[in-house]
Length: 147
Image (tube, rainbow, N blue to C red; front, side, top):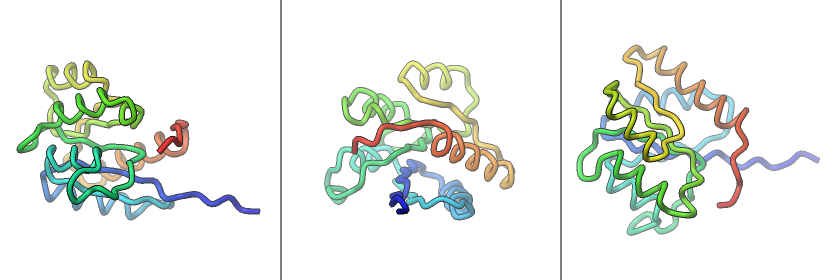
């Protein structure tokens, strides 16, 4: 008897429309079932994660891809709130940003980011990074299924 495998829920918190399109296109090329949900700023991302306002029925993501430099609430503030919440803290958060500033890297890990990845500019390199993220977090790593 074949076991039912639910789609993987991924939350992308990103304000750059071009990066959103790139990420969507990269995820479409995978052989796994996934739902890529997009929030276009940190405040919207927190509303999604804490199931507030229009996100009251949102599924808790299995993985968060988080940009740092966003309007309203920046990525570090989002990361801090995720990792300070008992239930949400188990969700892997990958900082996926254009910044290679050492202070951003340090602050992200101080706020318990699971990974920090600088976004490649080249589309094929970006797709390769997304594929590596997918392979590592959904094929190799075991994530608790508590949501």
